[in-house]
Image (tube, rainbow, N blue to C red; front, side, top):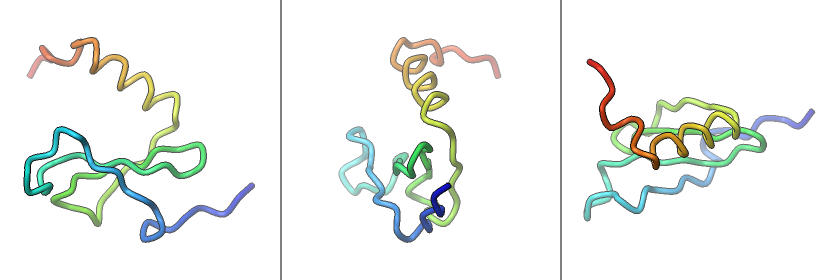
Length: 71
């Protein structure tokens, strides 16, 4: 089992839909078999999910299935 990468070592990628200032977006970083996700306005906080879960989320989002969530 490999040692986890520290958050400061992760290479964060900003969304191409980020505003011009680049400070209002979601960022992701690959950490082995996991994807770390954070809000650029709160870079000290992140969540980590498996690649399969992230792939399912992206597929669902791209299909528009999250456009009309209740609430």
